[in-house]
Image (spheres, helix red, strand yellow):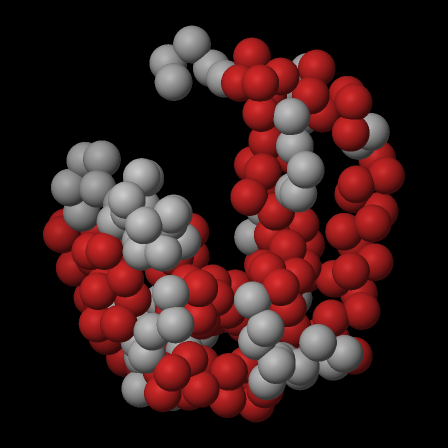
Length: 201
């Protein structure tokens, strides 16, 4: 009976593996949202996105529950960071207030899940990037976000621990794990950081 229950899952995994092409990656709402926040170069002082197709992608890929992220697998970390990033991107350009409201509603209803999620499933750099996104939301005037939610306290604490382990000056001199989370770091010296770029780009 147990084997019969597992067979549909086994078949699904096999189908997924067969459909993969070498070098393909799935779309990321988080990465797309960061690109969507890039202001247009020149013109009207950056009042429009440089890459409007990314904004359209965000609009087209909101899930029925108001979130963004992997529709096949629910991970609180994935859904929360993707949803907040998309809300921030749309808010930056004053677009789609109803979609932003649905995203914020999802965040309110599910923030508690961050405290329940297994720490091992936390993506690399989450404790750096998520607080930075929260600050960006605050700076943009997003008022309906649960800034003081208790589930955020351990994330803030983990961020402080990680940042204390790697002094800011060292981060600019030698490659460290923080390089995976630069979008979550304010006030960086990019001229120095670019010296740490790998030779392959």
